[in-house]
Amino acid sequence: MKPTKYFLLLQALVVLVAGAYGQDVHYNFDRGTNFASFKTYQWVGVPGRVQNQFIDRDIKRSVDEQLAQKGLTRVERDADLYVGYQAAVDLEKGVDLWSKGFGGFEGPRDRTVQGRTSTMAVGTLLVNLYDPAKKQLIWRGDASNTIDLKKDPDKNYKTLQKAMAKLFKNYPPRAAK
Image (tube, rainbow, N blue to C red; front, side, top):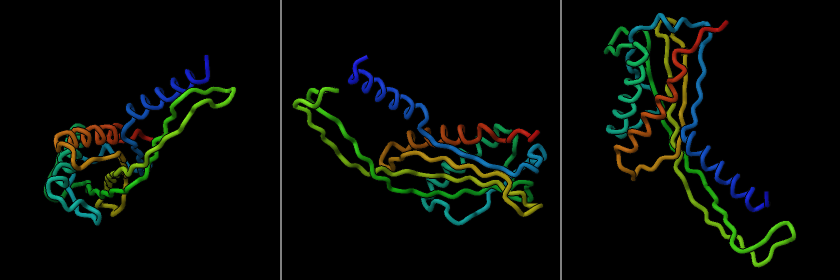
């Protein structure tokens, strides 16, 4: 395979992988917790919540959907599980480079490299689950993705739902052996 064809194939593979795994998710948990014992949950305020009421509601609704699918019931008080979230947006710089012209291993011929810088907003949503009886954190998950707040709110909500589905895929965690 010629080097330029190999390079194009590698670029296509990177684009496919980046598209398939748009959200970056992680989770961790207290291995001594019996997650099957939790039946109800309630939202609690923690520092770092989103101040925009629409986005706050969307985040809670998306998490509510996932917890309901896991068999948990939301209550207003006296729950056996507390849920809180924090959100942050970081600006990251990106560089796009491309080349024009001919060239290969034998050396560049009429080849130029051009580039463009961009700034991307990367949103991170951190979801915490607390055991109120023990007064401790028992599960934490985070999801990160590039965001565009100027986008259609319905598209943003669908992206949020996908991220939360991916985040809660491993909840409740399997019991340690």
